[in-house]
Image (cartoon, rainbow over all chains, first blue to last red; front, side, top):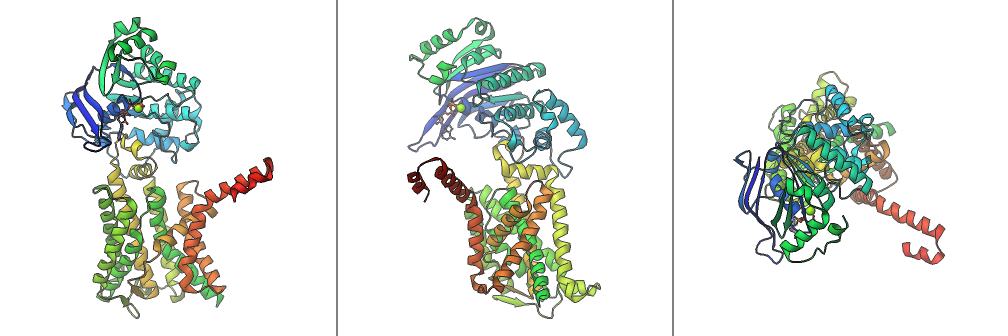
Length: 264
Length: 306
Ligand SMILES: Nc1ncnc2c1ncn2[C@@H]1O[C@H](COP(=O)(O)OP(=O)(O)OP(=O)(O)O)[C@@H](O)[C@H]1O
Ligand SMILES: [Mg+2]
């Protein structure tokens, strides 16, 4: 499915702001695999997802999707295969457009857009059914502007949009982190349900160690732009949050000094 | 006499409304402050005037002006998307370059169209009374533009264009080339602006190298006035509001001229309207803060909002 080999990315090379964000990442996802990614602030998690999505090009190394190297293909071209949900609930939707317009945009991911109607009657009915599954009552608000929704509702909608056309790969970047704890739990459970019922291949970044262990079939830990730990499914089941913290200390040689990671 | 002034005001409002619709596309839909407008308005006038002078059919001349404006927008779009020049600067570069281009096209600083065939004389020959000719053209063009824009903004590409202005990162992740959308929007916008310039030149019977100066500010003023007075709930509503905004703007101008404002002060006046409109959210917040502080806190707090 996804195969990354020795991927490097440095921001602002050669300047005082030079920052190596990815320092040789190797990562392979098998079809149907759901990987959770953890790591401290600035470890390179978001950069990893952005570079897979094509937001910026790689400096070195290769990224292949289904055996095809996609290094050169641009973000909107890769979008055909990739669904995304961002950390910021504002990022995944167009606030000034209605719920049905946003969904209609998502329904056309990977398709040629032309001068046909942007949204049709048939699609509206389909959206209503899909929205009903979120159990947020959004199915009755197709004509509401998305800007009027709460952060949790927007994230749930973004999740639906990212998976409306089945993506080969779903990228989730701490998509529950900005929500209040109760809503975050709901969104995480919705995520898990969608990924499992559709059998999606997914990469989910989280700050929450418990979530990282609870969901998915593999957990990787990042530090300084590298993957420093890989917990396969069997091991993951037997690992507790405390174990994970100890592993982190062993591998990096220092204690976890990250409140968000500890508190989670 | 009042009737003549009123009629003239309506005619101007409608003919300039096409330009305002163009500004709406960039400023509101694309969220892009495009200064090309000043150059492309004059470009439309210059192209149409030069071609009409060369005895080209005025309808064809107007159409060529429309496409010339589209090319101007295309160039601004390329400067911004391909060479990563900031939106404001891309527009300024096009605007300045167009000044020279327009002089080249006209061959001199102004062209008179008196006693030449224009689309307005063309309409009278279709049986419309001379008095109403400009109004008929204005209404026809504005209504047609509003309907076509409404249809377009409700197509798949129209959706993608709107999403590009709203949230570029999001719509790229849904597979849209936002650079292409920006170029498309800028072209459409400036094509409309140039069309407006072409019609205005024929309406006033001359094209002038300076006729575009301040166009962007008139456009912004009209868009803002329209949205504030007539609302911006749906696309159809906003498009109609923007056209009506253009009319209201002309009425306001006619009114202050009647009150004795010097015509040369009009641009200052228009800039003031836009400034007040753009500053109004900040001003409103300030006023509200003073109001609430004044009620809940001691008098000393009040000085903070001065
Ligand atoms: N666009 C950018 N330009 C410059 N530097 C960047 C950019 N994006 C990320 N960086 C830098 O690269 C490093 C890795 O950032 P990244 O956002 O990938 O970390 P992260 O693991 O997602 O952290 P967090 O948990 O805080 O989200 C950081 O030092 C960051 O400052
Ligand atoms: Mg991050």
